[in-house]
Image (cartoon, rainbow, N blue to C red; front, side, top):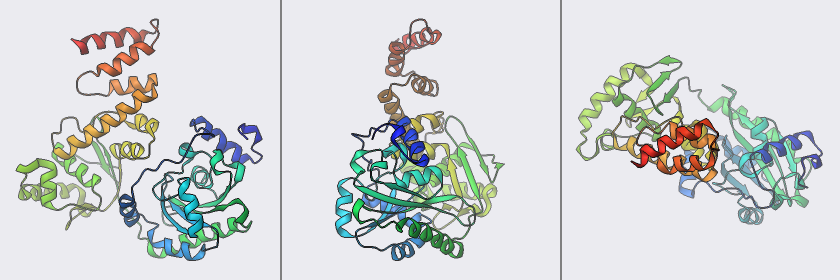
Length: 377
């Protein structure tokens, strides 16, 4: 089954269309492994579903199946259950650290539940990728009971012959139990801090614009990249290098707190808010292997005027990874977008690729050729 018309249920047909549009190959694709075991341990510790996992595991403990919990991008953070099934699952990357969104591995219960926001069961040949035709999976989204935001999905997977038809209803019921648990134990986080530092310096707290200096932005970048917190000594090293002075950092943080109030916590210094950032979005997309999304969100270099070591290193890493992604994809629009948002010297390799790809009759060809000549001078 490779034609969308062969998918008998509308939810599966629509999922196949999305998956094929994302260029998932039914014959060759396998789920990408994004995170190492030590990284998974860190992600679990900060994920809002962590407190609900024991309840889910107890509720969904069944023979010949595994229980899986993912984050909102489809990364498997927990995988528990029958040892024999787990060994089989590991051989096909159905394991902690792998990514199971539709664009990564095609139609599957976890990815399709994330895409639709509804419970989904995917049987055998309904999986787009043939490797998983021997599996049946049932997944249900779990939402923050206070905000309604999606937190991830819970899934039960098993070999086709061992999955009972009632499993789907049990998974949905378990998701509701988890939400009830979270309503009692998850404290709503009231503040939202938005940092748009790619190509410029714009930030707001709960929709209120912040008047930040470059040093303020550097501090916030360091804290956003280290959500568990940093000491004054660690911040001094990240912002000033070996010449950094913790006393100077404490003074900077005192001035910053005048704008952030209780959002900036101490011992260690950390942000008590939901932090959104354009550079964080690019970073997440790259870690997930989603080069297309990373390129779309990359609007310029991270704080281009900053020379702080933590910013400089992140800026170089993001630019290099996005650059590699656009060159590998060979997409004209992506290459043009990257060339236009590079604040440093013209990138001769990117411009040469564009010159070869654009027809001579395209007005952009002459512009790219002119920029390439300047880059090579």
